[in-house]
Length: 263
Length: 252
Image 1 (cartoon, rainbow over the protein chains, first blue to last red):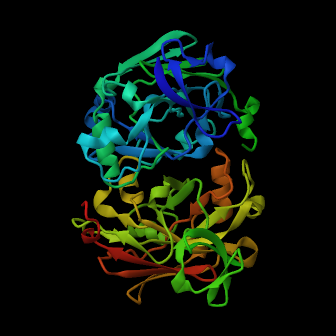
Image 2 (cartoon, rainbow over the protein chains, first blue to last red):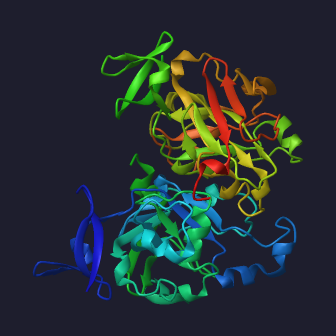
């Protein structure tokens, strides 16, 4: 049993409860509720920052390209981007497949939820600024060129499912050694671990807050492992992170998605 | 009408321009020296355009882009009028960028150019500082250059869309310590306001209080600690900012 916070659709604020991260259930009084009995909403209200090239395997994939045009040198600072509010999506929400696109990359990321204002924090105390951890599917249209900001590929409506909950930081022994798996239609498609991060959770928090303040409720993604699996319309996606839980979504044609309508 | 958000008497107020003073929503009329200027709206998503003036693109040795070059900013970087921007001790090239800010008024998706202004609430002035020492070629311009704390002054006013007859024909200037260092016109944008709204809303939903910083003309000059930087757009406002050094930040 783990202490968690979550948001229910239509209810203000976060609810605290015990959850079973293995079964993906919420324990409330004597009831054990499965996700379909709870309409989870996105628990994040702040700004969501993604991190690129923070898995060693991702950098290895780029190989010597980092020294060639257009990059000319390996990255020095964390490579960051913003997932804006129109991308926010929740547990069970449908991910719209844009018109003219047939495959989307499923980016499994551990999300660090900020608990107190973090300005220029030291690596040794960085974890004390963390409220907890959640699961993010950092969806993108496949693209290889990282030279220019990729809003067009990353910032589509519904491209950032988050949830189902935030697991309290104290429950997580070591955020830098957690297994992450993606299942598409119940078939395992990817497995990796945060032990392969270029910058650990603490190091990333220190390097990011050196130049930008993270506020309570903000979410920093540790990054997406190399070889993100691709999925198509109709696919059911499940991202499992050990000790955190699992996040499920389906991909639908954009024309059938309510994300086209005003939110 | 020109509207502002200000802090006064321990609370945040909406205010309007009232002669050379401000009138708070509760009716009190206050002097400018008595208030703290906040950003005129609380921005939702903040977009910024790079290389959107041909002369500035040439200045940076880039060809004008075929699609708008758009990047995003977080709330940490925004500050109001008459505030302070940090220049880190060890940098060599930090420059201002005077930009027309467009504030979205309504949910917008798949908007055509000819309808674009119906979705605009108003305009403001932004100063989109960049510290070029931190440029890297991954998602360039990267957040370490463009999303630093205090590096995006916005204000002082939100000017109603109906008060500006032609936002595509406004003079922009920047003065550093009263010396004119940047001058241009919004007429020289490569992608004009309707084109940008059409482009962004073609693949994502825009919402009320999203802000689009529309890029800057040429005239980038290094600024140093103590400089008073005034970015001004005809009819929209005059945004004042002062550069401060690391001495002020006792944990640096």
